[in-house]
Image 1 (cartoon, rainbow, N blue to C red):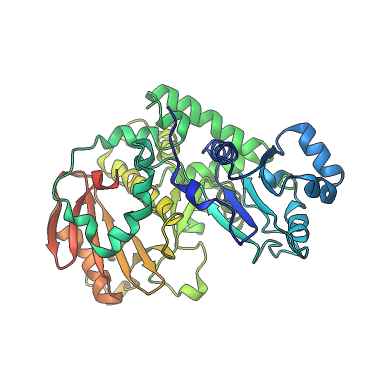
Image 2 (cartoon, rainbow, N blue to C red):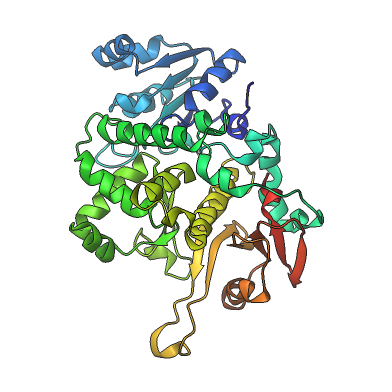
Amino acid sequence: MFYARAIESSLKPSPIPVVVLEGARAVGKTVVAQRLVEAGIYDDYVNLADPLTAQLASMDTPHWLASLPERTVIDEAQLLPDLPLYVKLLVDRPGSKRSLLLTGSAALGRTGLGGADPLTGRAIRRRIWPMTRFELLSKPERMLTLIDDLFSGEIASQRNHPPLGVESLLRTGGFPRLAIAQADEATVERWVEGATTGLLTEHVLPDERFDAGSARRVLDGCLREPGGILNLASLGQRLGADPRTVDRYLDVLERRFLLHHLPNLAQNLARQNRARAKIHAVDTAFVSEAIRRADPAKSASPHVLGKVFETWVVNQLLPCLEVTHRAVSAFYWRDAIRGKNKPEGQKQNEVDLVLIDGTGATVGIEVKMSSTFSLHDIGGLQSLRKARGMDFGYLIYTGTKTMRLAENIYALPVAALG
């Protein structure tokens, strides 16, 4: 059975001459690229993972590029480090009508020209994520409107939703080979172990050198604290590594799309970096496997499952930002009031995911892996509204009924996300 991906509609040639499609290994980039060629949207497909193609391309890159059809897909483009610079020269020629789709399993073209991106102003960047529940249900078109429905409150108009077996979804995640077959636990563990080892031992970027064992320890440290707030000093202490080394390996893992982070909206956005950000895995199958490998009993803990569920929900929504017509930025929010200014025993207020569009409209999302809830569970959303303003807030839970909990704040069944 064929499963369409929502990102396909965003990859067609446009007045911008280059589209860059990035994402982890085995997430579906090649299948999407080949489908676009089969549909006649692009004229040809070449893959730099093929040794002969790579040899021909590296011998004389300018002439090799010039020989390709006008609309061409170049898969695994990161394997030719100077390619973005030559693409820039090609599409900048007077009268050029080139339309190129470059795919990559690592961040592509961000280190040329002395650290500048040669494709700036010439490329649109898109990220393909593991499959969402909508895509697995063959409803990718729903992803095109989901963000609008969150900002308008329309998503709360459907009162009842079917129950959803969440734990199996967390275990299998969204990588196509696992998710489509709904693989059993043993198969998931073997696939994740092999995929992780492969991703950390092969040179996705030709000039990238690092110790795979150290990268694996940093990755496991993050996977076993899903949705954790990054503290480099604490993580370095747990791993027996210098915080600067940990930060460097986090760069490697994010460039390979194994991890991603959400900045804290409560901090100065002009000075945002990864420090104090929330770290999420690209897929919950990797989280579940890492936790089971360390402590099988911990993987069944309600608290741990709740954190894995938070990552799953975040990873259902962020792919929709790639295909919506709105320009939307994603954060989490944790208030900055602490110490003597915080009443004794009171925790910092927090919202798991905050979406803000170009007009400043704001949506807050809190996640709870339970079929029941209390008004206490929307305390973070109410605090966010008071501190920064919020147009709509949602408590996503595993029940079946949509309920209004306060003005423009709703309990929303997770089945509304597919």
